Length: 342
Image (cartoon, rainbow, N blue to C red; front, side, top):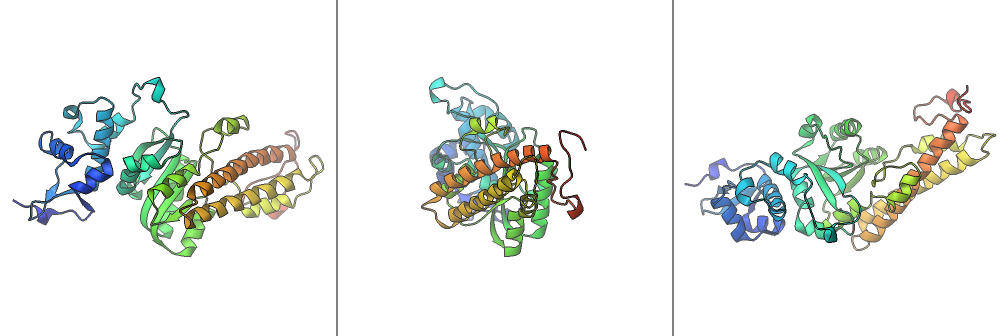
């Protein structure tokens, strides 16, 4: 009997599309379904199997876990949350195949985006660093209530429409979980909302975006040399979003000090220039798919340098008693604090 009357409103996929996305033969998917009950696809009047988005996610996780030695018979009936927890547990690998450097931890909002990230095709587009998906959240409402104990470094969000409410929800989410970088992929938005999100430090990109471009976008938020970055007081492999607005940098650049001469001005101007080039490289990445790898590298270079100079500015400000808060009043622009004494 057909159950087309119960078809969900979300996207549905034929078994061939699931096979292509997950890199699993159609025959294997059918065995996992009929013999082990891994999936419960709906069927059309013509007996065509239609798989939901969560089925694609499950196929990707089952493949990963079975390759790591788990018997399909023992994991086929587990739900997505259980499978994802298992996939994030450490497993033994041969030293000869260990990739240098730690993978970048990633929280993804949107099942369709998570499926892209975890697909074999997408993995082939990454040049160096591995991506470890620690959390997959169905939507922003679910994300706002979720606890993320593994503290992912990067948040990747897929939404159809960017609105002011989405911007507000994302700001609250970042404030709660302290993501180093947030990447937002959208379909429709007004220029005003897009610009506001960019000013908030988000990386915003409009669909369509290819797997190669998406991989390069993730690469572009990584430090070029994380070990060198740590020597300057920056932890982790991910470049932090901008700390200071153009207004704050302009104010600091106008301050004249006696102890460090023109150092605050020079450093503030350098940060502003690097941030501008960082944004310029990102816009080039958006426009030119063929040069996406070069632009991702340039953005990573400029972002790395910008982040390091922001650390330098903090040291200068602490030494010179300069208030770096965005909301500082004009009369409090330079509070003389030297060597911890007011």
